[in-house]
Amino acid sequence: MQLFKKSWLLSSLAACCFSAAAVAKEYPVSSASEIHAVMGTVKPGDTLIMKNGAWKDQNIRLTSSGKVEAPVTLRAETPGQAVLCGNSSLQVDGSYVVVSGLLFTDGYLPSGSAVIRLNGDHNRLTDCAVVDYNPPSKKSRYSWVSLKGNSHRVDHCRLSGQNHSGVTLVVELDGTDNTGRHLVEHNYFGNRPEGDGNGFETIRVGTSTYSMQNARVTVEHNLFEKCDGEIEMISNKSCENIYRFNTFRENAACLTLRHGNGCLVEGNFFLGGKKKDSGGVRVIGQNHTVINNYFEGTMGRAGGVISLWVGIPNSELNGYFQVTNALIAFNTIVNNSGPCIMLEAGLGSRDRTLLPEDVVIANNILHNTVTKDTLIKGKKNDKIQWVGNIGFGSAPGYDAGEGLLKADPEMVRGKDNLLHPSPTSVARGSAVGDYPVVKIDIDGQARGDKKDVGCDQQSDAPVINVPLTAADVGVSWTIAKAAQ
Image 1 (cartoon, rainbow, N blue to C red):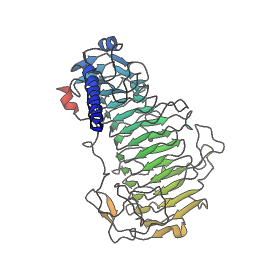
Image 2: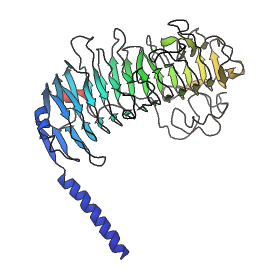
Image 3: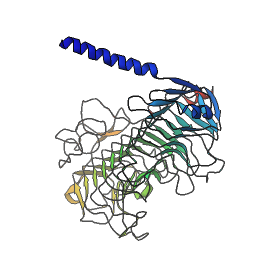
Image 4: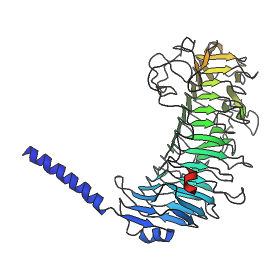
């Protein structure tokens, strides 16, 4: 009897799956009007297939919704071969919708705020590209991708060549739990020339108005290359966001925790390539954690590689909040221009007088043998705790007492072209303190009980996280193929 029940259950499940697959439909479409015409009949699990070729001046709006196990899909007939050009745009107002394989190029947005807008909830933009989709004037302001609503995913996309005002990818918030929790991963962001002021960010998460909202957005495993639009390549303007395992190559900009609190910056590679105005991380606000990052060849944008900014008393939301309760730990900062750590960026300007407080700077390698810049810049501040750091090369520039060991960490360049402490380095096994938040190193290897100083733990475990190249992220197809 039990066997019969099990057999009946399996047969029923198979029948349900077959039934769901059988009713799912495909709709070949060749224009925005054809897409609009079928919106009333599209059901969860259905797919709209955009025919190959040029889609000129097409404003697509998807209003149908799928389900978590049966999304509505809009995809190119061949990835990269459905080319939206002229004055085209895409807006998703439904939920559980997947958009795949589209290319926006050879055009621009004449009006509106974004080329691609994901509204609703649980939508996905994957394997898509926006390339050189620029208006005649770089003062024209619009974003390329806008995320509003909850729990969207943007992955394996290429966003390259934006030269006008407006954020490349923006997260819009409304101050409630109805917006946020997005995932931005395995994308290529590149070739963003310098703008003429504010508003040329590559990513912005929130605004000053809603900067106290817990957005909880994750930005991970992306490559940022030559994103020079303005000082804030990534502009964090909300709370509890995560920026991890990204690679930053030759960007004349910084990852900036501009507004909001409680963000994590972990396991990123900042490879400045000695490019003018390349930078690291700017820290403003409360409860931020900056751990396990690698910095090499940056050129002192924002006054230092990791730059702690001075706050304004009773700051407005769009001002500068005091840095408090921050953890700066297990980072490797090697051969950059400017101080490894700046403790008082902006002091005295724009009413900034509040120095950082309750900051722990622990188990970092501060290494500089290429310039005469001091390792640390700032006045003595008893509200900063120094623990287990190793400094070498330049003069310390700051009396950190026992919290800064002056010793050669014996940095050796590895197969990944990064500098690591040698197996016999004083950095090996000498970290001070527990710091439970630091469970792995920048390679993704377990730290164990006896932690090494700096971002790299000596280990024979597989390396999971490596510096990314353009071959590792972005679309599965090439722009050259799309033009054929």
